[in-house]
Length: 77
Image 1 (tube, helix red, strand yellow):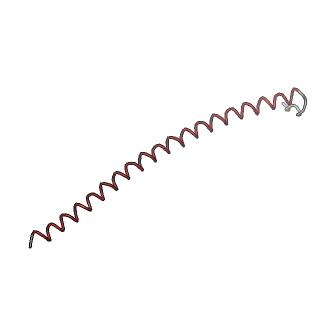
Image 2 (spheres, rainbow, N blue to C red; image 1 turned 90 degrees about the vertical axis):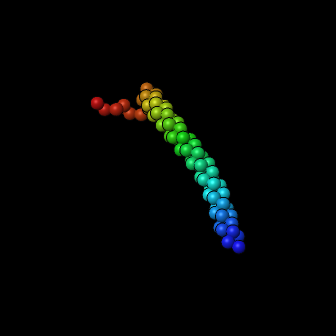
Image 3 (tube, one colour; image 1 turned 90 degrees about the horizontal axis):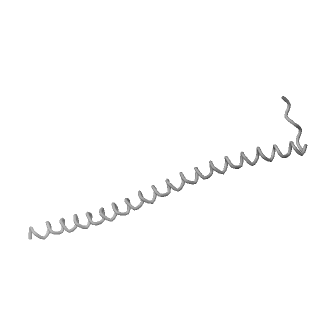
């Protein structure tokens, strides 16, 4: 009879261990996916910065064209 309660405890502990293993596996997957999202967001920020530079360049060129066509007053000084 003493073997039976000990066996129940061991089975319970084994079940807990299996569940913890599944949780750890899922957590590892979540960490990998989060890292991927962080890299994607960083890449988007770089792309956005590049677009801002290009827009600034286009804005300067349009302003220069408008001045040449006398659509804008020339800057003083």
